[in-house]
Figure 1 (cartoon, rainbow, N blue to C red):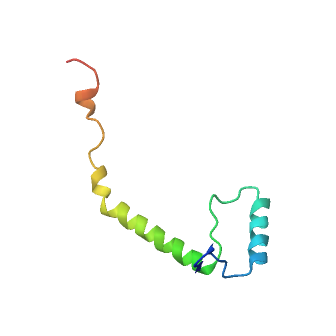
Figure 2: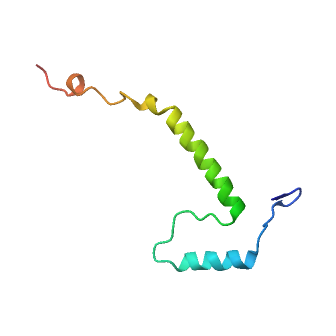
Length: 77
Protein backbone atom coordinates (compact mmCIF):
# COMPACT_ATOMS: atom_id res chain seq x y z
CA UNK A 1 0.00 0.00 0.00
CA UNK A 2 1.29 3.50 -0.79
CA UNK A 3 1.00 6.26 1.76
CA UNK A 4 0.54 9.69 0.12
CA UNK A 5 3.56 11.22 1.86
CA UNK A 6 5.70 8.29 3.01
CA UNK A 7 5.63 5.97 0.01
CA UNK A 8 5.24 2.24 0.63
CA UNK A 9 3.77 1.32 3.99
CA UNK A 10 4.04 -2.29 5.16
CA UNK A 11 0.64 -3.95 5.29
CA UNK A 12 1.72 -6.93 7.40
CA UNK A 13 3.58 -7.73 10.59
CA UNK A 14 7.01 -6.16 10.23
CA UNK A 15 8.51 -8.27 13.03
CA UNK A 16 7.47 -11.46 11.19
CA UNK A 17 9.02 -10.18 7.98
CA UNK A 18 12.26 -9.37 9.81
CA UNK A 19 12.38 -12.93 11.16
CA UNK A 20 11.95 -14.31 7.64
CA UNK A 21 14.73 -12.05 6.34
CA UNK A 22 16.97 -13.26 9.19
CA UNK A 23 16.16 -16.88 8.28
CA UNK A 24 17.09 -16.06 4.70
CA UNK A 25 20.42 -14.58 5.82
CA UNK A 26 21.20 -17.80 7.68
CA UNK A 27 20.71 -20.03 4.62
CA UNK A 28 23.82 -21.55 3.06
CA UNK A 29 22.51 -20.70 -0.41
CA UNK A 30 19.82 -18.03 -0.15
CA UNK A 31 17.71 -17.20 -3.19
CA UNK A 32 18.73 -14.21 -5.28
CA UNK A 33 15.28 -12.68 -4.78
CA UNK A 34 12.73 -12.90 -1.99
CA UNK A 35 9.17 -11.70 -2.36
CA UNK A 36 7.45 -11.26 1.01
CA UNK A 37 3.73 -10.74 1.42
CA UNK A 38 0.72 -12.02 -0.47
CA UNK A 39 0.19 -8.66 -2.18
CA UNK A 40 3.83 -8.60 -3.28
CA UNK A 41 3.53 -12.16 -4.62
CA UNK A 42 0.51 -11.21 -6.72
CA UNK A 43 2.33 -8.16 -8.07
CA UNK A 44 5.54 -10.09 -8.82
CA UNK A 45 3.65 -12.85 -10.62
CA UNK A 46 1.75 -10.29 -12.69
CA UNK A 47 5.04 -8.62 -13.65
CA UNK A 48 6.60 -11.98 -14.59
CA UNK A 49 3.58 -12.80 -16.78
CA UNK A 50 4.01 -9.49 -18.61
CA UNK A 51 7.72 -10.20 -19.14
CA UNK A 52 7.01 -13.69 -20.50
CA UNK A 53 4.34 -12.27 -22.81
CA UNK A 54 6.85 -9.73 -24.19
CA UNK A 55 9.48 -12.45 -24.66
CA UNK A 56 6.99 -14.70 -26.45
CA UNK A 57 5.68 -11.89 -28.63
CA UNK A 58 9.12 -11.07 -30.01
CA UNK A 59 10.76 -14.50 -29.88
CA UNK A 60 10.86 -14.73 -33.67
CA UNK A 61 13.07 -11.64 -33.80
CA UNK A 62 15.89 -13.86 -32.52
CA UNK A 63 15.60 -16.25 -35.45
CA UNK A 64 18.44 -16.22 -37.96
CA UNK A 65 20.70 -13.84 -36.04
CA UNK A 66 23.70 -16.15 -36.06
CA UNK A 67 26.44 -15.39 -38.56
CA UNK A 68 26.43 -17.55 -41.66
CA UNK A 69 29.37 -19.88 -41.09
CA UNK A 70 30.07 -20.51 -44.76
CA UNK A 71 30.35 -16.81 -45.67
CA UNK A 72 32.13 -15.63 -42.55
CA UNK A 73 34.43 -18.55 -41.75
CA UNK A 74 37.48 -16.79 -43.19
CA UNK A 75 38.26 -19.79 -45.40
CA UNK A 76 38.92 -18.99 -49.04
CA UNK A 77 37.71 -21.62 -51.52
